Amino acid sequence: MRLLQALFFPPEQPGGVSSMIPYMQERFQSSRWDMEMFWLPKRIRNKGHEDIRFETFDWTEYGDSPTVQKYIQTYRDYLWWTKLRIQKPYDLIHAHHPIAGLAMKQVFPEVPLIQTIHSSYEKELILNGKIKADGPEHRFLGSLYRELELKSERMLTVSRSFADYLGAYVDHPERIAVTPNGFDEKRFKPVPHENDVPQLITVCRLVPAKGLDILLKACAELKKKGFDYVLHIIGDGPYRTELETLAKQLGIYNETIFYGYTLHPEEFMPFFDIFVLPSRAEAFGSVFAEAALSCLALVGTDVGGIAEQIEDGVNGLLVPPEDYMALGEALEKVITDPLYRYELARSAWDKAKSHYSLTHAVNELKKLYLQYSPVKE
Image 1 (tube, one colour):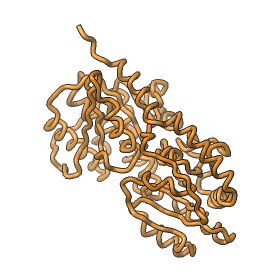
Image 2 (cartoon, one colour; image 1 turned 90 degrees about the vertical axis):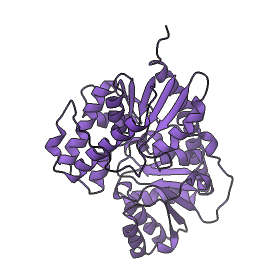
Image 3 (cartoon, one colour; image 1 turned 180 degrees about the vertical axis):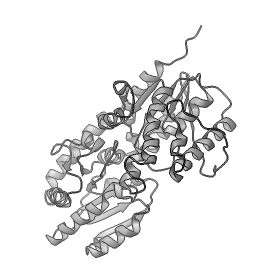
Image 4 (spheres, helix red, strand yellow; image 1 turned 120 degrees about the vertical axis):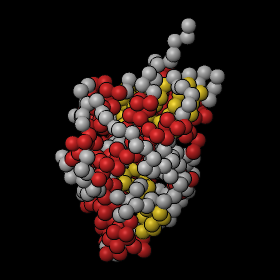
């Protein structure tokens, strides 16, 4: 069976898709399966000039927005690149971004399309202050879900909570299936270690939606109470300068290390003790599964896919979003009690191995793909 995994970002980009799809490829290389990947290179800009039309809505109603114009131009570029580069036919296409799925279906209308929605671009833009709720950009991006529902044979997403979110935008929410991301268990190797000072780590893009301002305030409370710790922030983004300034204002800059973007944080994540990320929204939260496979204690917010990965007090701790005092108290529990911290980490590791391993994800996808296997005469 000839499979195409259609991405938007190149595989080396951070995020859930890049954590899974490149590592799936070797699991599919056999006499029965032939899987390839495709994406839009960063250098491809303003190449496409095709007239864009959708069947379920008129995008030109929102065409005055620069954000919408940029999205449409990227769609044109993806179409242009697809037509230029893909010559041979495939039996099935699995797309991991709305632009990828819509472009593939336009170029190859007879090929079955499975579409996975990994996250909400519009929700992220709203939380990051880039667009307004119910504004033209929000309505445009929300309309794409119904277009994807029409064009794809199967719609998937990565958590039950995000499936519920998508349900408001489509005609048949009951048809959306949930398939969590999978992570190559061979990449994550817990390392026995003892840190005299508890080491906290977070890995994310530095944008307001990730709630790192709340994390810094929580850490300031820990310092006020006299607890020793080091906070390692791995990632980069437009919010970095503000976060560094906030850390200085709160008097915790010396306890905080800003690394910038790192390609493979899983290589040294096992040497830390506690993973913490107080996101304001999260479709799945791939980095929690990665931290669990590294056998770290997990502390997160009770939102989206995070709350589906963590059972509070069993394999991690959950706190309300925006509540830095509650976050500080949760961190205090795992900082002051190493045995409790280990018990949470071990339970998180057990769940991640059984629910979020790449082996499990690949087996589930193979079952799904075989439903669309071409009939041999």
